[in-house]
Length: 169
Length: 468
Image (cartoon, rainbow over all chains, first blue to last red; front, top):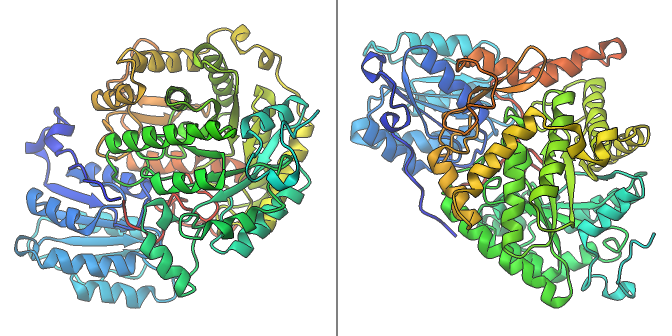
């Protein structure tokens, strides 16, 4: 019952008036394969645009292969993964392996955040695991998350930035 | 009043079930709002218990079987794996269970006095419809647009083709003496922040789509939004548009209690649900889908649902229809009506084949759902909540609304503004009746608002399933 997936609109097609030359860079925002939530992705898109970046929002339920392929084509300055259905931990571990296995995405900054597990009990450990697996930053759900995320994006273009886990909150 | 219709002995009710649409209209016509839960369980025992409790609830009810999210996206191996290993499913896997299991779930509960509707959220529902036809489950819900754009990435063209095929197949139930009923989900797009005029336009267009493909018993949804006054205007406008455009009388309106970020307090949740019941009765809607006090915290239990059904019924009994409810055209042209009519006419002008016209409409931005990031949505429109609490356009994109919408420059929606608007209803209802407050749960950060179009068991927000 599988159906072909349409390719998402390129930023140039979607925002003809957008002055891409002035943007600080390109950010891909995406949900994971098992997560149908949208509002978290819309919020992140607006937030990152306000920080001066151009955003390609791949939306909810994005299969791993599609996300990797889009990142290969777009060569973004940052990839932001958001998951709020409690399974982001498993989905995220699988996904970062596939992204890092792609030669052109070995050093691309990738962040993940949201409700990454069903309970908050192991938030610290899960954040460490995700960071160890290759994420540059992890933002567990929490009031401090947005401010920390802003700071993270704010210092992005510096190539030296390879922060470890940003758990806490 | 005889709700039993033409049915004979109880033994054949499963084969000749009552027309869901006729049942609801007759029940509502005799002065009672029909109330319905969202409810779906993975095991036959729980599902049967849930249906039985709904039937026994102190209200005029119809039953719901909501399917699980694996079935929704066609991952039937995952259903089998879950059933083999005792892993809980978030809805009833109707395609996987043998038909005799489902018949035993319904046996003696579903009947001329208690029709049952199946709800799922699939853009690829072929297997689901095959099960419905075999089981003579003659009431369901969906739509080529509303079951596609908000969820996942199935191309709209595929969804339109799938729903055409399934609608025609479902319509052939009439050859067997069974009237199939379909409800549009178009009045609920994204759960929140879609302006009412576009909700009712899509709801009507989906009803026209189903009728075009042979379905003759219809209901049209509208989900409660942010302003009671605007919501009244919207339901009255939808009823007027139905009378003007639908080539059948066998339709009714179903109001959904708010589907966005729900109040966390008991007084807030009941206040919001009560206003939905009030809205339905005031505007002449026949049916209400309830939400429960547990909505913001967890998947509701059967008891939560029964309490919600009972509360909605109690409120509804104390409300009288507005004078305009008898003749929605008499109230004159509201702005909601004018905007919706502009959208409907613009789409119908794109061609006689309504599925084709819907595809063209989304491709050209003639319809454009705010904040919907599906690749087939134009993504130029934006909405916001104004100072009076009305849900308005911040940017109409390429939709043919320029001459209708109050003259104002496109307004930029910020991330902070979006968060405020997403939790506007929760904030207002939790605060409004705070005098009788039950202490609120600690507020979670609103970056992860409650899943939109959430049903009981959340099959529209698959927790574990992938895309089709």
